[in-house]
Length: 152
Image 1 (cartoon, rainbow, N blue to C red):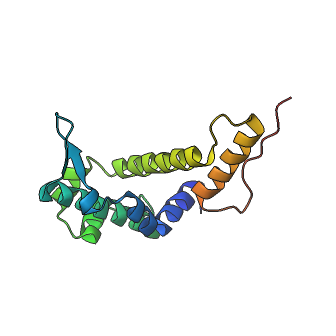
Image 2: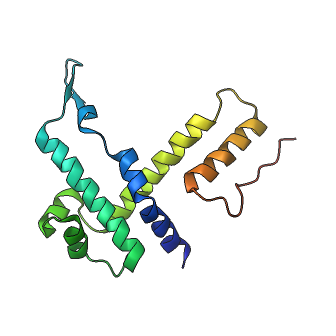
């Protein structure tokens, strides 16, 4: 299994965790008005988010099972239980799913690193925090985190 397939497989294995983390609960779905008031999203907007998440999850599962090239938009739509046209309401092309996956992965990495990195920490401490964050974000620690040497 090549590195790209392994990453997709890893993502699909954790898809339920990702969905729980990324899916916004209905009561938390809010938008701001020009006056700065916060109001909940309407049913239509909540449904759009849910459908997009179903499409995303279905795509990751299929990519892990069959591979990216062997998965069609029709299969993704079928797995997500939506029409083919609905796929294109949320993603312009299949490649956009990979872009979304990469963006979400980067966002998770940044969040984990921000939580682990103490503000104003010395470089060796910061390096150790980044190494721990890397291990957590990749959800595997078979070869160990990246190594850093102290400055000087």
